[in-house]
Length: 152
Length: 360
Image 1 (cartoon, rainbow over the protein chains, first blue to last red):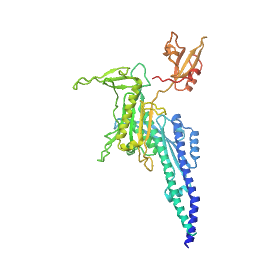
Image 2: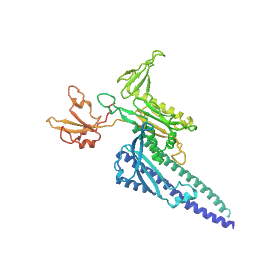
Image 3: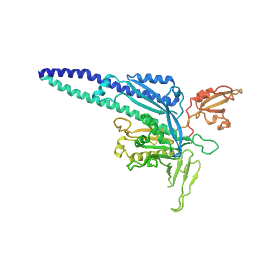
Image 4: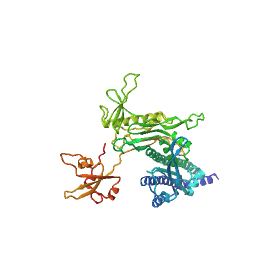
């Protein structure tokens, strides 16, 4: 009887070691690499917008395709925060406030001093990642981060 | 033979545990790399935004407005920095978040031509004091500290490295008020121009190191671990020294940037340089026709400009090029038409390949 249990445990262990573990490891490493590459793409986009001070539809399309080409499915949202100076009568100084716009037409020309913020949010999570997140708690859940830069 | 199976099970379990540990470590390293890169980028963007908001060109009151005299106004700088960091981490721009970000700043120095500002914790009227240790204080830039030069004759001067003026306060006795002595457009005796820049760089560097050692989040033991080094002049590997006007921002570990605390410093620095403009000029051929060309500022030698453009007369012959206009880019120069020659400006190939020498 104990022999039988030993054999079952052996087979399970063999299966886990040779099949499940390498698959999980390679999926997870690919996902983390994809995260890093998406960060690179967003950084390049913000650098470009900083110098050219306008965002065309081609730029946004390219960013969308680049971010989605690494294996994750992400939603990209580009927001422009327009810089305004408002006089604060209580303190007697001028303060800088920002208000956000994200319609396509308003991203065409950007004033110097505006902040461009790119929000990346993962739409679908692969089953393996969801499993590691729920069962083991290893992952951080769906990818979500923002990155911002000042134009000018 | 039956004993092999349990032995195999034990070995397999041990191997699985090893694989698991290695895997978790790899995940942790990649996570940390991602967080650190994002943090570095955020600090760089925020520092650039802060620097831009402090710069403006000053009219030094002479016959022309000198756009090269960059002056620094540090009063509104810090909220811009905080705001860009908040945009990077999708935090709301509230005062509590700003304070949390400011607590992570180890050191920030903004240097202008005639003095530098250091970020300090100072008492504040706008932060309410709830009898907790950190209340009632906020981070602000202090007053502008002058650059001080101790001459060989024992006198102390303050320097302005753009206008090249220095002030010297002779004190006769302890109860007579000092008189300011300002000499124009020359450095104090025994001081060369390169040496003046190094003195400025050295003073700012010592301030930065001093601030780092006294910062509340970092003690001296950790500082040794980081091996920070600021060179006095550009090293052979291309590390630049600190030159005014510029900014250095050093941020330490923060609790908003990642799920686990990052124990590395994030450094960002910027420097303002003169913009190289494009000179559009005309050249009169011997048969009387004029041709229009352009080149970059700093490529044309002074003896090639004619007298009306401010050239030098060397050996009795005047220069041949008459400068008509300045443009920001070569594309703008090419699209403009020369009034003297009635054609678009074309590149002057011979001069365009020369090295651009800076004015100072």
